[in-house]
Image 1 (cartoon, rainbow, N blue to C red):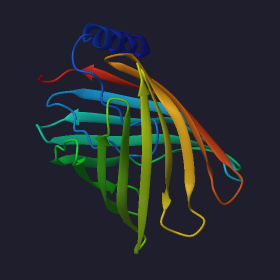
Image 2 (tube, one colour):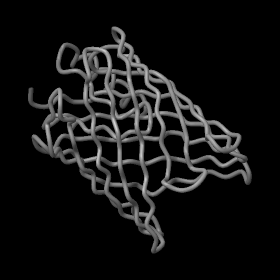
Image 3 (spheres, rainbow, N blue to C red):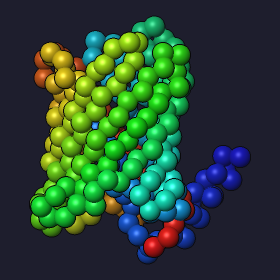
Length: 229
């Protein structure tokens, strides 16, 4: 079965070369504001190691994206989490959401999208993310998220802001993000390399501004099926 899936992945990505370029939501914390073209199926997956007092390995962290209509995308996120203290492996409950384009944007106005979501875990949580992005010129751009989450009868607000620089096929970024709570500010930086129009590889890492600790992550984004051009 694994060999069949690998051959399908290889066929789908190589056979689609020359079509529209991938739209990735990684690396970094900012949720993409760009909706996939209708009929496009995309996967992004990776590994993340955290060490903030206790060590955690998230493998894989996987997001499936599908362009449902011209302005709406379906997103399903899931991950396995490996805890080293105590040693155990857990499967996080999937999170389902829609990404809805609100404003296409231009040089003066950022592209905007909203993402209502629901977490199907035992402690049911729901939320809404406003995501935006814009290009200042051919190489510089920025993206941001403002979000709120309701879980265990409490609300938590979240933010992320990133600046990116593109050189040829590589995009570098620096970012600040976190819950809007004391001692929650974090930073990260890294890059994504466009291997071809259908595959992007990435590597990034970050830390907390208020106490010792770090995380590092690497992954891949790939188009499995192209939709309407």
